[in-house]
Image (cartoon, rainbow, N blue to C red; front, side, top):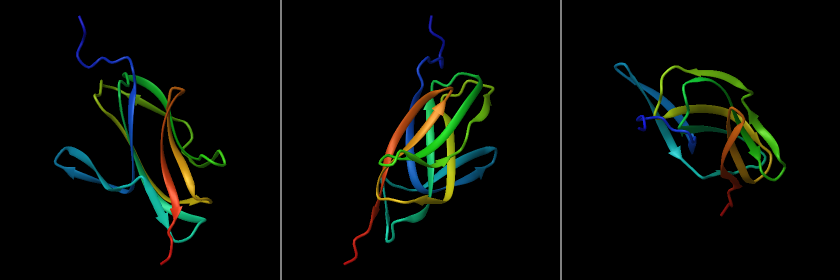
Length: 137
């Protein structure tokens, strides 16, 4: 017999956006994602950008976990952001474990592909987005 909600495989979805806000409605807190994007355009490269990333994971079991969030330049293989390892404890079985980070003034030295890398207990998940220089007309 299978118990509802128990999953053995972690699945992860990423949303990269220009920002995120929390809204409180009674006892519930909701995340509002502002302008989701796959490409960030800037008049100047190198540049500093503010961005947000929201990660939704399913299959995360209750208990203690070590998580990390990084943004990596795919060309240089350098991290432009690294949260460092963080200990979290999940006390109840969640259908959706949500991690949001509202990052300000992150330095992007080059155009190109960047990876958002979420690590939980040593298991890495990633997705990409791009930074490009706008062409003046």
